[in-house]
Structures are given as C-alpha cells and as structure tokens.
Image 1 (tube, rainbow, N blue to C red):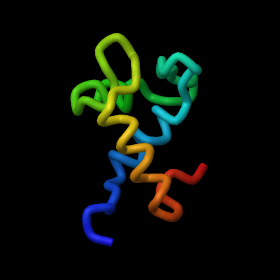
Image 2 (cartoon, one colour):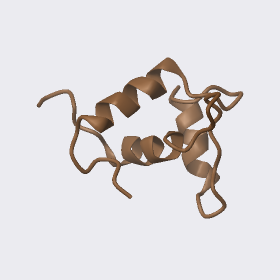
Image 3 (spheres, helix red, strand yellow):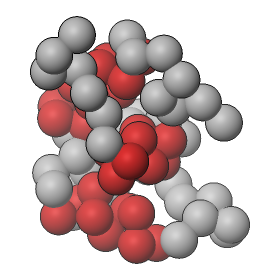
Length: 72
C-alpha cells in the first residue's frame, strides 16, 4: 500500500484533528501539547483560524484506511 504510509507526525496530527467540533474547529485537550497544533497549522492540515482544511480531511481519510494508525 504505497502512498498510504503515515508518519508519526501525521498520526499525531490526525489524532488531534479527529477531536473537533461539528463545525470543524479543532480543540486541544489540556493534556495535549500545543506544538502538535502549531505543526498542523504550519503543514496546512489546520487553518490559522483553527478549522480542519481539505488536506486535514484527506489525512483523516487516509489514516482511517491504515490499520492502527490513529488508535488511542
């Protein structure tokens, strides 16, 4: 399954953006470092306003198809 490999950074981002409100706004739980959110914004997975982007939704779809990539 080439092309579906998920890096550890992408996995952490996917876990973060999987926690979002119904309107698409990402929230950071207290126990989670804001560094992951900053990385997600810098890499285009989350907008500067805190919304999941098209790239972020694609990451979620991709990680859903890779076993054990986003497990808690």
